[in-house]
Image (cartoon, rainbow, N blue to C red; front, top):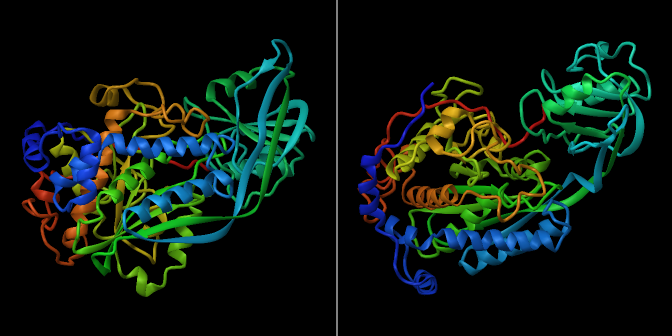
Length: 518
């Protein structure tokens, strides 16, 4: 496995295309951007700013603060987030539609509790409720299955009914473990991680067993497992049921509607926090880009999508794709996904569209390799290193690359609960041995949970890639366009956009992903 390190020689080309940062005031720049045609990389990237994206994140933070600290689909916090996005898109001159759908929601109604009762020392234990956990408040002895992963009903032979089951992550889904424990008569389940770091998982929207299921770290789980005659108190207070939420779709009034470039991020947060990094970062980058492409006048229509109920299992994007008639699917040239793009302990991950890493899932649909190369060329041209991450389908690009849909896709990611390696810390800075995002799926995923330098780079990457494909998708699907004005190739060549050094794809592989079900 190889990591692509910085190609500093390309930065001169970037500066030639984009230019030095403007010295005008932010207000004057904003006024100018509202009036002009941003149809070159230089013009668009002068107008798409970190400050502008941060303003969108601040608005999302205020919405969460006013709505029980989160923006979960099916709640007032999500509805206010959707209203805000609609307003921004409409002010940008886009044609906006709101696609409602019903889904199985999960809401945490009150704080989750895990306490050591005996033997001493008694006290609270940090825990996280698993999405779609049932409710309950139990104090009981703790038992473990004969195989610590609890993936077979036979692992619970002799399990004492009414005990709390302590189970290790690994080998099967969390739902399978919890269902096996429930069938054996467990009063609750605590699942501990099998790698360092927090575990924030989901049982899936089809999980129906009514018992509390929470998670703890590997270190805590192993410590609990070593205690004889352990008694815990476990409390979860949750709601599972049908709710209505929505996707927000916005299209440019210009461009070929038969060759559509889709750009998406999920708008919802988890119950635990405001989700300003996950995925307020992707949302903010898209809103900032859309605001400044009002008059870009590309060859191809651009369709921005902010997905609902992603945290419930890609529900919104799946609903959209499933309900898109085949004739309309055929008009989608490609899909770009931006989910978590400013993680505090970041790595610049690019989805491995060509499977050059040879790890995990196979390649994406034909053309995905060219999207990967475009992002690689962008990082190379801006003097940044990048690394491949598995094209596993575990974010909103999943429904687009699914068998039978096969829409070329790609995107960027800066890491969630995965642990940064020493090699990564040497290249990107930060702290080895800690999560890429220490606040992933937690209340602290707020406005301050950000790496501003990484976020700035990736907000520009959204604008760069969107403008590139607005003018030509030829490298992806063979549909001829034209070069971006002022750019050497406009993305129509095989080496990537604007003549940036393309380089071969590849790099160190990461199996880091946004949604954990096992």
